[in-house]
Image 1 (tube, one colour):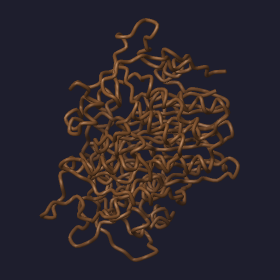
Image 2 (cartoon, helix red, strand yellow):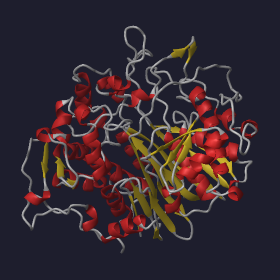
Image 3 (cartoon, helix red, strand yellow):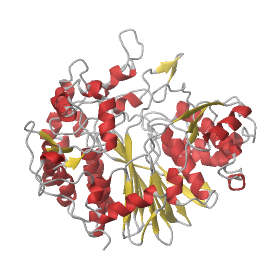
Image 4 (spheres, one colour):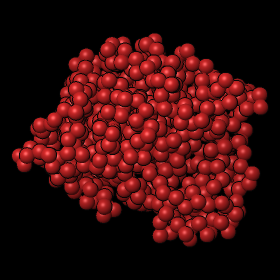
Length: 597
């Protein structure tokens, strides 16, 4: 067996407070000493990290999991190894991510899930997006003069918190596709919470960058900044409060989260956020539902690309980019040709123009999904692209509507703090799930139950209208904010061939679209497509990731007339190619790994 783990050493810790404790490994006796990182305990993890650093895919025959953190990949792998489904493994991995990568996702957030069911040969998509409080108004993020609040004034505190969805999504997926006992899926997360995990470089850096905001609320400060000092890389941390929360959910189900003690804790945390109290109430938690949405599937060359529909803009925007590019021979142009990137960038600009005007929660506004993805409409948009000539002007198109409505362009911000999970199980099922609490550390509110609450409501437009015309993504009671998350499963001849997704705010759309093109057009292997330097154009400025080729691409695009910007990216693409074997790849910009057998 590839995976034989001895992962969790029993540790003795000195408590800093009743709920949380932190201890550095060199304070322990030799027989108790914890490894500084998980790879020291697992040969499989070492091999995965080595292949990732060498730019090679991880190969397996039976199943594969790729997440943003070694601990989470291991937890999911143990479930898959013991015969669990992709849904079972997702639950185990997500429970761990909420502990070891709390800045990105957790019980207090939400997610979109795309599932390929090997027994029915169908794609199912689940909307686990948070909802606005039923008492909220469209002026939620406006001051007394009707002007939009400053972004972080809105984010930090209770005002930005939407109804958490992750526990409900876990439960829904388990009831549909799970095979393991529900309570067993939280074992690894509970052990890590009680016995300790090693703080990753990413988490430590995130705490240092955000220390001022994390210090606003006492419970949050006590955990991330114990004794006034930020948790450091490789420090061993426990979270007994989180362990107790998971035990309650494991033993009693999700009712305790949405109707019981945990629900009361969530409401109390939001109402007691000094200076920025929220509106979320028990009825919001009690009424929350996961919604099965129609998948968004588009044909691109010989492939069928399936993703998430509204309230996510990800599936439609990715589909539009591919549909606009369908008439161009990107394979012949090649990945190193600046003209390939010129076309991809302009297709993205057109998709974003439509996204900003039309995309929102389709339960509240009329979203012209069919019109936006209509082949003739996309062909007409592709006519605006000319090789070597910058497309101008870029304006929203006029797709066919089921109803005649007019919207103003959205002005909402979307800052990335997200994670992605890709899984293929031994039964042939595939799962792609992008999970988030929105901004780094979400609202910065930590419950007594040891998990952070989201700030998803700031994904709504802070203004409800522009020049007298309503904005589709305006805040309304019970509405779900627009997202850019784009969990994707690519099919060929009805069979899954690629499972992929990424964090990254609105850049997710470009990360995923570019990776799909690299896979389909340029025949890159899975590690190459997640490692490829990014080049993204959303609203006119072509943003190019620093790489050996970036200066040449920058010069070529500037000659055509584009404004450019060289920058760093923190994507987290996690992908699995399904061929003769399963091939896993994890973004070198993040700490994830692929594990399989």
